[in-house]
Amino acid sequence: MGKEIRAQDDLYLHVNKEWIDKAVIPDDKPRIGGFADLDEGVEKLLIGDFNKMAAGKLKCPNANVQKAIDLFKLVKNTEKRNAEGIAPVMNRLHKIDSLNGLDDLNAALKEFVVSGINLPFDMGVDVDMKNSLRHALMITGPRAILPDVTYYKPEREQQKAALLGVWQGMVAQLLAHTHLTAEQQAQYIQDALDFDAIIATLVKSNEEWSDYPAMYNPMSVEEVAKLLAPLDFAKLVNDLFGNQPEKVIVAEPRFLNGFTTLFNAANFDKYKHWAYITELVGSTSLLSEELRAIGATYSNMLSGVAALPTIEKQAYRLASSVFSEPVGIYYGKKYFGEKAKADVVDIVKEIIETYKGRVSRNDFLSEQTKEKAIKKLSTIVIKMGYPDKCNELYDKLVFNPNDSLFTAMESIRRIRALDNLSKLNKDVDRSEWPMPGHMVNACYNPTSNDITFPAAILQAPFYSIKQSRSENLGGIGAVIGHEISHAFDNNGAKCDENGNLNNWWTDEDFKRFEERTHAMIEEFDGIELPQGKVNGTFIVSENIADNGGMAVTLEMMSHLKDADYKAYFCNWARVWCMKARPEFLQLLLSVDVHGPAELRANMQPRNFPEWYKAFGVTEKDGMYLAPEKRVTIW
Image 1 (tube, rainbow, N blue to C red):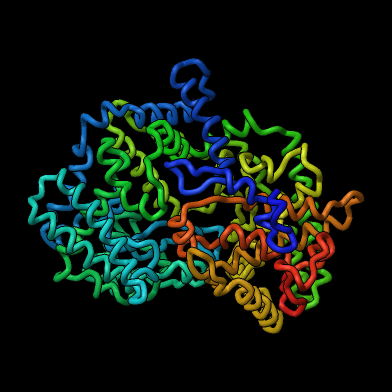
Image 2: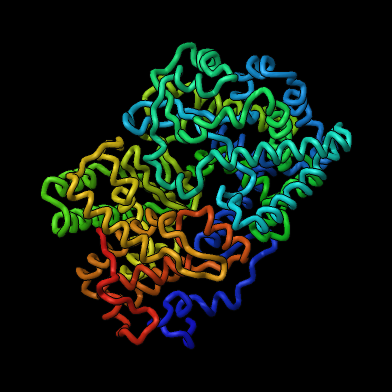
């Protein structure tokens, strides 16, 4: 531990400073520590297995894992990729370039949607947030080039110019590999920048996206079609589904209402050239090593990364992502212990029961609202480790291993797109897992009221059967409590026990909840860090979840005969340990709904009396917070 830094002044550095001082961030990574280190461990383990299976030295367990191995080998065949150069993507680029006007685009709409070529809007099928057993068609705007629309504000003009300058230089290098003349290349880049500038005025900021109930704006197909003119949206929907769905969920009303300022006959070439460039940039990781390196220039600059991941890492990451569920099941069955699974399931059940008790004793809710909150807790579904069976989609994911990598992925993307669109008229399968077993993460799904804990996160420092109960409660226990608390954060609180957007609160109770939510926003908002100011509104849902996770596990600590509160708080701080590049830390402030690591470690303990008692913290210490400013919601 950083003994020269007292826990009472900075818990995060007290626990982690010695490691931070010695740790070296690899050239191909933006950060190390915590989640990232565990993920790297899983990656090394599975790369070893993948190589053995590829060489026939380890038996492949099933056909779907074999497809992952075939894709792994295809990515690693750099000799083939380098010989092909840019050729594999040229057919798609030609499809875009050969559009001569609106009639051509309208005729190609279905093919563009199915094949994933960028349109001036995005659409797909997702769970209907007000009828979570059914699916709905959803429409959004396209993504801007910069990480968030706040980058386009006048006060960030210098930063915007620098970032777009890097992007422009990267695109110029890529276009030099195409058939376009120098004059055409310059025009395409300028048109794409002009089109992007309009997109940035219409689409949501990341802060706006963090309010996901605000995405639910149902409209009829006719209403959407009128706003999307001159595109023939009604014909597109009929071509895709054979009929018109009763509604379309408009996630970004501002975008749809301003669509004609973005896309019209006068802007057609700007759209076409923007689509050409975004398609090219998005394809580079599947082409030659030279193009992969050029295509990573902008994203690497954003995160401060100096080098590309090795081809072996790229191969593993792509294969384990495309075939995530079968790979996750393989990992879980081979490396995840049943003893650990049973122990963690018991912890989850105990946390849920403790949470019910806390809700029943809550001092700002009426009995009516408490009853409904407890009902929601009682119906939470636990998904632990990995699923019992693989989703049928993976049986359909086929490709020719003799094709180019780009063509193979084109086939896979098409199958996935068709599968997604086919769900519109089907019931939601709630047995599906949102995360695979080899992912170091956890989540709460508000539309199905379930919590998922992949096998890969159930490692030290989060969890170990060798750690004390106090340490495990400060690690995986608080993470479990965090995910459960998402059922009652500023977003999850608007969904009922079935996952439907539904107001189950009394007006008075919700007003008191919002007051506490506002206090949590104020606790973090405007904190100055070297990388910039913290946006308390943007990260409030995660802070509410951290607060709830700590509250419920501290109550569980009070029932332990050998409770070690210092060990609890120190492991809490250890879990969030991270060393990252300055560029990446700045990026996270704009794109990550989670608070900065050091704040996650240091802010929440101050809200609880157990912290002050464990370390004897007084008002003279840096980690002291006046009682009237402390926030506890759940």
